[in-house]
Image 1 (cartoon, helix red, strand yellow):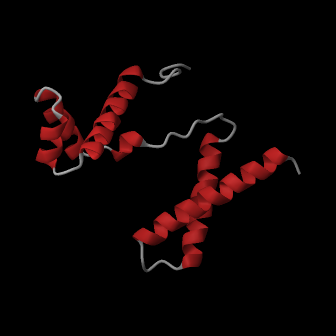
Image 2 (tube, helix red, strand yellow):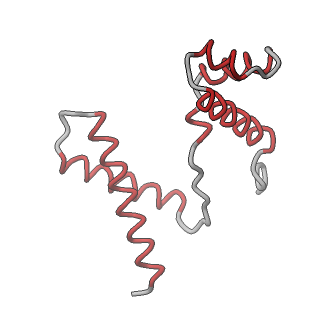
Image 3 (cartoon, rainbow, N blue to C red):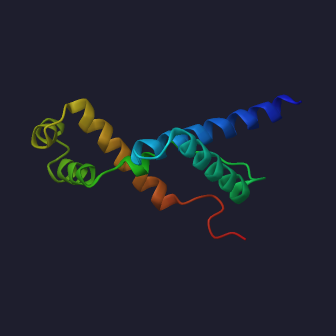
Length: 121
């Protein structure tokens, strides 16, 4: 077998395992075996949906942004970019405030720019 086939097979197993862990952690009465079956079913569906495409899998920063993060960012901008006041108001460290601000800025930039092939086709 080729190295590429091995990488794909490994990715599929890891995707299925990730899904199974997520399902199991959310549905406690589900057996481990059934969670694994669901993981493989969903991984297979993802392959059918996206198979043959060259994909970049983002880290999902936009999904990590909460309403609090948006409020934090708005407060930061409205108050002259005062990170000390922002961190204090939202009861987070300055480092965390900067991180959440960067995530909001990155998500807004990605939203404005769109994808290279959006609307094509």
